[in-house]
Length: 284
Image 1 (spheres, rainbow, N blue to C red):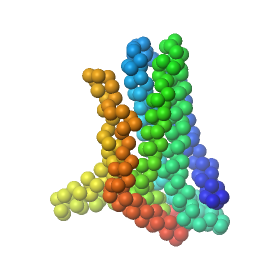
Image 2 (tube, rainbow, N blue to C red):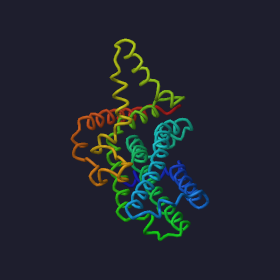
Image 3 (cartoon, one colour):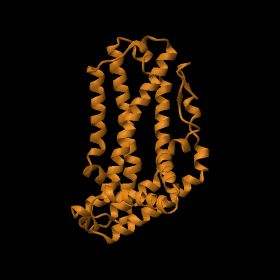
Image 4 (tube, helix red, strand yellow):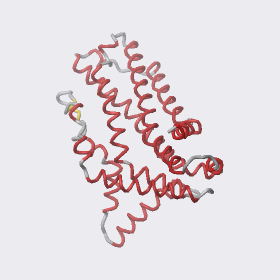
């Protein structure tokens, strides 16, 4: 256990962008709240409209951090095993009493759990700071503008639920990125993209079908549909979010879905392949 914790710390030491990038994004958003143009008309509306504005605010902040996290996580996973072979540091770490599986799993843990949690805390702190700044600039009571305890709790619950379900849903993609990172000698991004593109093109040319394209599309974009009853909808007529946020998660349906567990098996196979490749390859 101590070895695994040390390996996770190593990832944070060697990849400072894990926390520097969300800190920069949060700082820019706070500066924008301090000096940018703030539209405050809606903040003087009735409590229900104010609460809806707060919900949109938390969703917007979370969406920005989630998009940045997704891009960085893909880059981190692709670079995680390739970089140590490229700079030959893999030889040093192989000389230590650390197993290849522990090393790969530490990078997997950072990529799918640690990085999302870092962005979660950064988004949470940023939302509170920006909400406070906007409230002060609008000369309104903080609690009556963008701060609603239930909205804050909903944001925490939804983010943690998305992280938990995302680990399972995106495991085949994560495993593929680790496998390519352990295999590629150069052009890691191209080697991650070309095989699935070649499969889709070959299927289209020789079979005239698009099954692989649909499967890949659903795996990339279908996580929300698998984990929730249906997407959040904003009503322009009533000005309300429907249905209630607490009714959106569908953990029973998600965990009982065959697509989830088929993906887990495929992802586990890719990760096992990454472990085996790390045992055998020390150069890039």
